[in-house]
Image (cartoon, rainbow, N blue to C red; front, side, top):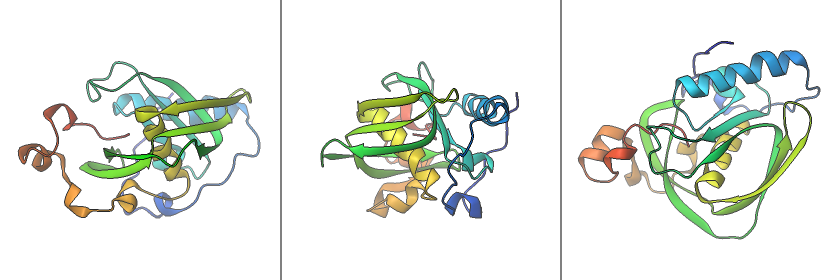
Length: 184
């Protein structure tokens, strides 16, 4: 369909909680969701939430197979979720570097639940329920935050672990393979 411009930090829509989808119709499936998938792929992202392309709806897409920006990442199946929710499966959290297509060229360390169960609806109205961990859980939580108007920078606990990709790499804080990673 179309590759849409990604909304950048500073835009009010990124700070606004999204509205639930009331009806899954052809326009949602053929326009919004396809545009989100096309945009995510064009940007080599691991995920994208509807607010990132200027649409205030609780829709997110994510997935990583073979991606040069995620050379060491586990495979995460391409997933479309409408009106998602989740619950942690334990209190265990882990810290990890994150970036965002809406905050290009920067990364920061964010603590996320290590294991979660998420649920939501596909573009065909079928419910998905998955128990996931590690990178898959991180990607989901990052995108879910976008639906609540939260950016990963709001979750950084120690700003010493936030900066420009190039400078973080030059200082040895992140390995070269992570320099171009933008969205988790």
